[in-house]
Picture 1 (cartoon, rainbow, N blue to C red):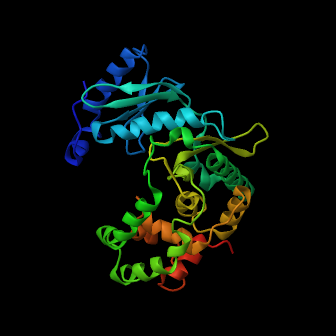
Picture 2: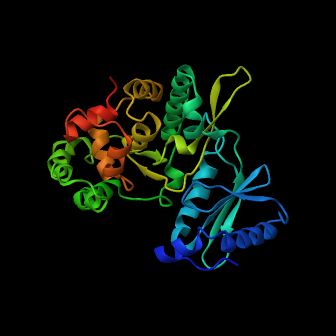
Length: 313
């Protein structure tokens, strides 16, 4: 019942349209033995995702993102029960119609950490970033060999080289001002040894480890705790430092005290210039947006920016 979605134009026309999406989601639920279950679409996220009753979540992937559905299912099955924070358990996954894929998974308790954050006392914030560091360390410590061949980019060093070659034009397309663009080549050259093939070990990466993908709730003693980590569709195998781009930008958000706590819990602290280099190389890196959302550095240089956003005080 869902029409094919292969292009950006089709995505924009179909995926946001509940008059099209909801009947398809309901039909798929019926095929999965969940006919009549209440469906509530989550407002956030790039993919269409529905709460199915109180206990399940249905995530849909159009043909244009079908590979992401395969990744999500494979990684969720691999990490479930192996991290110090809960992740969804896969109930069912597979193909639907017209190239669509789906993952039916358990619903985790709690609310998005990005929503809860403004209400949290400082002690809870500090404890939560420590728990996040522990969870990320556990993820990076998992044996990723069973996922080799199923996750990109395959050749990490070749991936970095491609990202390096397109770094300036990628940021220009995202409207980064020229005085920042002209600094990128020399900055990346200066830290090239830090992101070169001789760099750190490879690990299973979430790649979007951020408050938006962490859940939290108050424990019986009133203290807030992490209750879930989700959204593994963009997972990769690569340099662990790559995951700290989202950590610094979206978890600790340029707060050096919080990044120091998270890094200590993780067990390793990455150099600020290395993390800004990975920000420029990241698939989703958008320096122009980050400059609008995060505190401005004391001077308009990439070196100053690296320390301001990724320093630990």
